Image (cartoon, rainbow, N blue to C red):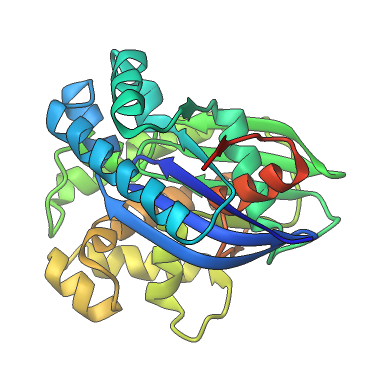
Length: 302
């Protein structure tokens, strides 16, 4: 029997809510909304969650709670990822946001983040074959090795698009010195994956991957190849944000992640010996509602 459930996350780039009917491993989206935060970049610069963003999150979550009730969701699960984990005083900040919004917030670890994202990605990218899985966000990149129904290896690297932009003072069009320093920074972290188990399949998920995919493949073809990442990095290195937005028909905020996202995915693919990746349209929130349906996550009654 289908259940209507809601999952909301405070990510490094956005706050996002999914309300969906969930049944037998399928997820039918009822509402899917987001608000841009750039939290990963802000925390990288300031070290903490500023009061204005705290206030914004309270209003956003209050709105999400109202929306979930409006659509008749039974329960809601709210979780926070890398940017919140890295922020100084995050426990106190989340306690304040939770008290004012009326929603409990779970600060999840990288292993759970990878698990949720992979479970969601398996909706449209099912396989029994060993697979690498990558999700690049604003604060970090989650890399996992999946085999026989479970993750057996997982790493979290501090090379999210917002963190890289803050760390290297990225502007658009990117200065050549910044582009080179970002590439070197990413390679330094990705080289730590030299002992990662090999396999022949790579699945990518998350907003950064989907932004790149939509920019390259308006026809919906899910495979993105290395030369395409080389091209989009080359193209966006020469454009301002407005030009990226217009040329590749992506939203303004997402346009700002394509250049750094292409560098990160390209470098990871080279290290893990892949020539292409399959991009899932699903991710952490779909994984969360599936785990709520199975009883692995409780969430809160509405």
